[in-house]
Each structure stands twice: as C-alpha cells, then as structure tokens.
Image 1: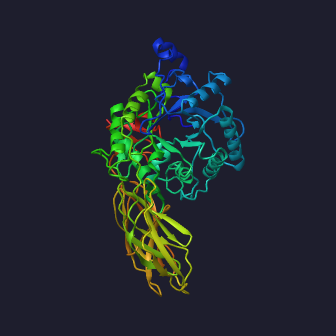
Image 2 (image 1 turned 90 degrees about the vertical axis):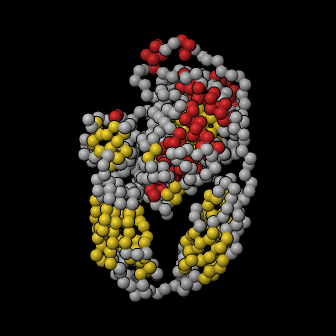
Image 3 (image 1 turned 60 degrees about the vertical axis):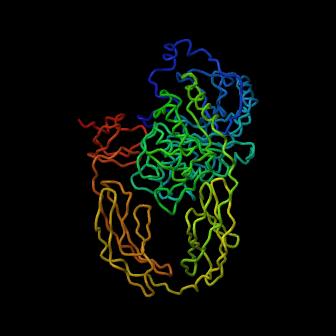
Length: 611
C-alpha cells in the first residue's frame, strides 16, 4: 500500500467520521429538501454521481433522496471478499428490503442505478481464470439480487498493470488485463447489451499517461501506466461511457506535448480531447489508440474541495464545456479532433453525490441548468466525401502500400477503412501498408472514410495491384558500421552511421531503443521524447527489399540533464534532479519512480524544497 496516496473513498479528511459528524451543524446533517420533479436531460447530457456505501464524514443520503439532477447513480463500492476474484456487497445503513425498494424507486423515475466495483480500497486482481470466473459469477449475483442496471469498473491502485514486454494495447498478454476483458464481455453478454450498462472510471494515470508512457514497453516507468487502455479498447463496442477521474492527478502531457495541471478548464479540455481524438500509445505511431465516440466520454470531477484534489469551480467547468460542446476554443489549448467541438459529449461525472449534498447541491444543480440550456445538437447524418486518388505507392511480394487524398466532412473525418476481398483494415491517416499478402497475386483495394457520428462515405474507386514475385534472396545486408552519437540534448539523441551493403540494395534501417522502433531510409536519425539524464541503448539494423535483416549495430548514450522541469507521473528521478511544482522548485533526495500522491510537497523524504 502506498502510504502517501490519498484515497478517493476516504476523501482527504484527517478526522474520523464520528468526530466530524459531531462537529457539523445540524442543518448539514439533517436530510435536505430536493426537488421532486424527475426529468430526463434536455440535451441528452448525463450527470453521473457516485453514492457512498459508507460514511466518511460527508453525510448519509438515502437513494430515494438523491437529487433528481442526477441521471445515473453509481452505488460505490462492491469490493473483494474471500476467495480471489470474489466480489461482495452489503448495503450500508439499510435493510436489504429498503435498499432494494430505493433502487426500484430510482429506476421508476427513469434513473439508472449501477453497481461500482473497486475504489481506492477495493483492489481487484484477476490473476487466474479461476479468479476471473469467481468475479463473473459474484458480480452477476449482485446485479440480479439488487436489480442494478449495470456495472461500473473503478479499479484503482495495483488492480491493473502490464507485464514487461506486453507492449501492444491491441493484443494484451498480462493475465489481469486479459481476464478482466473476458469477464466484462461475459457479464455484458449474459445480461444483453441493450439492457446492460457498462462504464469505467479510471484515473488519468491509467489512460492519458499512456500517451507518454506505456507500462509494458517503457524503461524505468510504472508498469501501471496506461494499463486501462487495452481494457477500454477491447470493450469499446459494448462500453457505454468512459468517465476518467480528472482529479487526484499529477500533471499530464496532452496532445500538444505540454503538461496540463488539474483544476482548470485547460486540463479538462486537453484530457477529454485525447480520448476523443485518439493518440499514439507511448508515442509509437504503430500503436494508435482510436478515438471513442463523443457520447462515450464524460468528464469526471470532484463535487467540492473535500471530495478530492483538483476541485474545479463551476465557472471553470462550464468554460471547459463551452470549449468541448460548443467549440469555443480556449487560448491555452485547441482541440485536435474537432475544431468545432464535440456537441454530442456524454456529460459529467462527479465524486460524489454525498459531497454534493454536503455542498448544498452546487455541482448537480448548476451544471444541470447549464446542460439543459444547451440546444440539443442536430444528429449528423451527412457522410464524408469518398476518398479520391487511391493509388499504390509501393509493393513487395507480400505487401502493398496505398495512399489517397483526404475526404471532407461537415464535422471532420475520424478514420478510413481499407477493404480487399473479405478483409478490412482501419487506419487514421491517408495511407496504409497491407501486409501478409500472397506473392504474384492480384488484389483489388477500396477505401471509405468515416466521421465521429459513424457515417461512412461511398467507397473510393478501386485500384488493382499485383504483388511481386517472391524473392529467393536470403542474403542479409551487412551490419551498419561506424554507428555514433552525433548530438544530444536533454530529450533527444541524434545518431549517424555508414551505409550497409546488400546484393540487391538496402531498403532502409530500423532504429530501436526500449520497446520503440523507428524506420528511416537514410543513415541518420534523431530520437525525441526521451527523458533527461537517462541512459539509453540504441540499435540500428539494415533491411533489404526481401525482408532480410542485418546484425544490429549498438551504441549507448545518456541524455543531458535538464534544468528544473515540471514534476510528472511515472518518471524515474535520481538524486539531485530538480523539478518545479506549484510554482516552487524541489531537489530529489533519493532515487524513485514518481507515483500519484508523491507530489513534492507531499513527500519530504523524497523532495527538498529549494530556498
């Protein structure tokens, strides 16, 4: 257990619940009056709230007394109990009959009531298929017993992680990841997609941090970095919405390659834009995490200062919503996925309903009024234009490279589908390399564009390409010689080498370090996005047209030590490193990898404030 980490299920209170309750005015502790008129959100924008199944000083709220401004109530939490994978739930301060009656009451008012599993204190690790099966059976039983509408996955702490070498989020191999994916698909299939609601509430550490670091592939970073990405990707077709916790977070790098700090409109827009635009995981262009649909994305926010770090005032939240929903761009961050905004954004989530009541329902009432005032967007039914100019830019005996002109769309194209025979390949840019083809064979390709609303364009004109005759060349190129470091900074290393020779000619070079590989055509390469003051081992191999690969030339280099840089998650700091945080500068006392909760002001054993 991390002793520095604040628990969401505990809030950030140091008093016990009993002492706090004794000190609060009776007006706060007494049941408050809430409106009795229940209505669906006018524009389809949801407000989701977590309801405490415990007392942490925020006060108890009966389910039937939850503000009607909430559309979805997440009962939190069901937690591990007994055998590995087994989940249990007992209503707090309720008889079983009364709890069931209140769930039924909310549902009769058109609200969804979902059971949330995990939380900061309820770590779940499905390390075996037996644990997976126990999880599936116990969760099904809880949902059926109490009549819940679905399941919210709120795995935190060390529940999810990536084994070393598990570098491709599209094909995970780590048991805790694979077993969770199987379990969620099983539970969803059992209840039926049309009747069952599946949601997730990961921390930024497990999602957006994956743009910079991915646990299974990077050197000296936390194995949990980006660990939710394979789960989200594998279940995106059955996932109703993702509500990333935009709180209790360190600074996170956005798609502008700048750090963004919680508590501001800038942070919320940048974090939402990442999952609405998609991003290369660990900045590897070959591992692109595709965007989610607009309605699948909700902003997760604390209801007040007691609920978690990074509270954002109402006006600042609505400034973020103006940018995301209405396209009123911020000066500090411009959305990448759509310059005109995301009018079908899913809405808001808050931790928590109880803290919202404690704060006189400021969150739910003010944001409900804002969202209801938005004119519902007109459904987008306009398909993008058909891709034009499809051609083959290169081919071998087993591959064909294609390129085409970008399509146009009223809200923007999100990707393309390349088809040949019965095979389809999804890409985000205007080029694709099709592999694993048969030699000396004709293939006919077409491309269609799609937009964020799921509209698909007409197909492009077809192009037929005959793959080359299979080569009998099995001679590898010579190893690149004279590999040297020609330059470096705190975040880049430049390499140069002498050309390899080959009987039919060298087609290119592969430059690799850690789990990252970059292909270049010449004899130089500059690797960017590196960590300051870090040692790397680089290898360069030559490839020929037949796919033969040379032996690797290897060189090591240590990036320059930078001046004080903003503190960030999942960075391996060494003694003497300097960082900035909250406008102050700190010096690292002892080597460590930064984790959430280990911000410099919180951990004097690790960081010394400079005078």
